[in-house]
Image 1: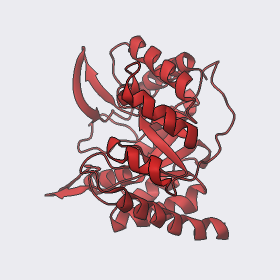
Image 2 (image 1 turned 90 degrees about the horizontal axis):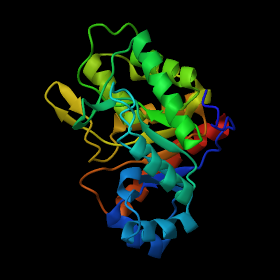
Image 3 (image 1 turned 60 degrees about the vertical axis):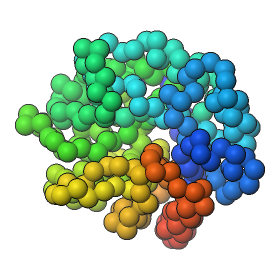
Image 4 (image 1 turned 90 degrees about the vertical axis):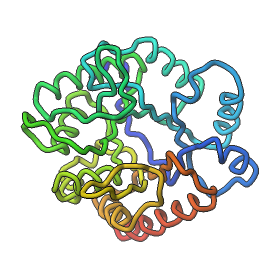
Length: 282
């Protein structure tokens, strides 16, 4: 475990949105029913300027969490210490509830593939990734969340299913988990596993956040586009996740074809409508 990382459980934040430039002014002016906001870390690493000006305004109104795409925790390249230093400086400024990135690799030998590449699910990879996660947590002074990515290929030398690998990394590094419900559905379709089985094998005490998003059918594969409304099968899987994990911070994530804010708020309301009766019964 990272010696400087807090082991205090992180309280759920409720129902949030991914903060996008298109909605800055409307959110600030209308004060909609949003419990928290997730920011894309890389958008705010440049000192000063309008992005940080807006970020300060949002920080005064909402709890924030930071979500990154550049950690490349599974790569064999050395960790980018300059990036970690920038990330910590942003965290010191924002004081986020938590920081997350993806359980993947994004490049090797200094080349960035600009994609979230899956890992082989092996004991060797668990040790490699867990060691790097501990280094990151030491550098940031806090535990991080790792998100499952959608995938379209598998490695012939994997020795375990993805959910077992994700759990083993989290337990070895004493990190937390961001479950992207859409990504689980996408990978389940592409690789022929039951996404409910995936959820049922992940320990509830590690799961800190959910992402909900949309995808696109392209022939035999589903592609994780995050540019469409949450489809019915993902809503159904989300209901199963709530029954399994309880009150977990839930967020609507849209990365492209950004719609009017009202459409995202409607999806957020549906997440509440699904979760709240289940949580009351529980």
